[in-house]
Length: 312
Ligand SMILES: [Zn+2]
Image (tube, rainbow, N blue to C red; front, side, top):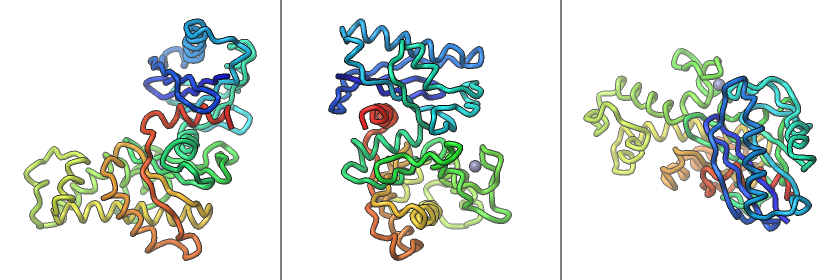
């Protein structure tokens, strides 16, 4: 028996074929065709799956189902609620894709929540039941898993960690969501660089970053690891914002493990330890016994989690 795990992104669709035991047997990547209100996307996915079925000589009755992560809010019954970056309106994606695939079972979830499921199943949160995933990349995202299950919320918008109010007052920047001072404004890769530039402007401290005006997020971490005082201040500010936000999440969800993923998490244990330190400073005492870990599945987390929607 096999199943498919699909990570539907704004640029590419990753389609994984998994064994019943959860082993990734094969994966294919196709572009996400967003033209014509995204009306080709599901058909392209069906074509790829059908091709795979023929190619691998898979009997239809051996397919347990198709799991899919969607980059937008989705309700528990599989209804997509205006997935703007795909051009999609409101419809039941589980029913539609299942009908297109001749009745194969389809389960859908929000992509970030599905990635969290992937990390608890086969990644950095393996062996735990209660997890919070925080992804730090071009944006800040995440997901909450309690008792091994995604917490989707009433509109499928739970786990939107990036939009936790984090910065107040005049210093708050406008977030991509239109709100001011979201965690994403200081925790995304671009946010980290912007905040570090602000810090450089305010300070007279020497820093290697002053000789490199086009510095990247990685340059900041590299400088901090080398002992650059100002870069360390920037990383400490970041870790503080993250630790405070995670302490807030922990006060509500009491997780066993917090997994940090996304491109920024390549900074590794150096960043992880600082976030953990800030968390322990701000968390309610009874929620403190939390393991901090790095995500291990990278860009495959979404495919794994989508497969787990079916295999679970
Ligand atoms: Zn926001």
